[in-house]
Length: 331
Image (cartoon, rainbow, N blue to C red; front, side, top):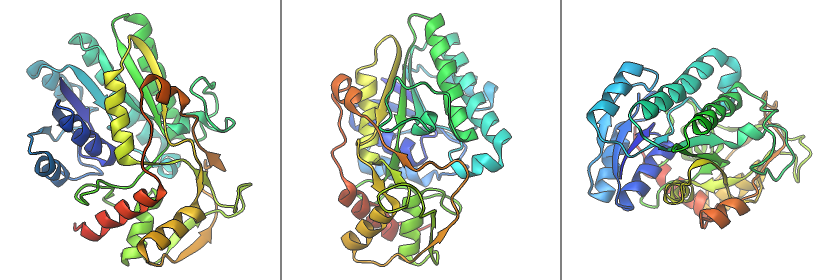
């Protein structure tokens, strides 16, 4: 199949492009490079020895997106493009609502116009808000705690309604937990253009000496050690989950958690990183961030049963691969 991947030069998108190419698909990438680099696509080409068609455009530009659909035969859409910082979304809600929701509307409209009925959406565990853990796919989505989470809820509803109106439209809503790690080659990984918003690149940059200290946001949560608990999934496992979703795409709406089903605290992850890589990560405790919750981890039984997919890589692999990428990475 020829697959359109929005945000394909980004962290999760790039690893999924690699997985799709390895599975024999062709890839067209749309990315405005606001938090990614075109050189990442060159590295994927090097690893796979396959070509990627790339358009440096913003998915909120409807006329530009329409021209891509008009000029290429597209079999499926993978939608990763979007702003993704939970904390930043609290400060810039309008920017997040516009970018993340409008891009989904434009892509859904184009799919209807050009009769493309396979859609894989990059959703998030943030849609669950303060629901009880472990999160289940059939939980009611009434309590997202940040604008970022709400943009995912709204986008899911848009795609769900499109599927209800069109019996041939098939969509998988993939709710990921906390993607971390990097490809084992060390060539592609998480490389934010600015100060990291996610924990692992923050850890690796402090370990490398690029930043002075890691900030841990709160040590007074009702958890095993007071720090926030999250379900950290290796990005390579996550990418393979997208391929599994495409291979098992049924008509209508398909909702899956992509995680490990296990929670790891921030302190536990920092300690594991130090022990695995024999490096020191200085840190300081600071205030909790608005919208953060104490615990977030998945029930993954549905994905295991229906997609025949399960995360295979653990925290040791995550820490080792992330550090390998950081040591190799040069701006």
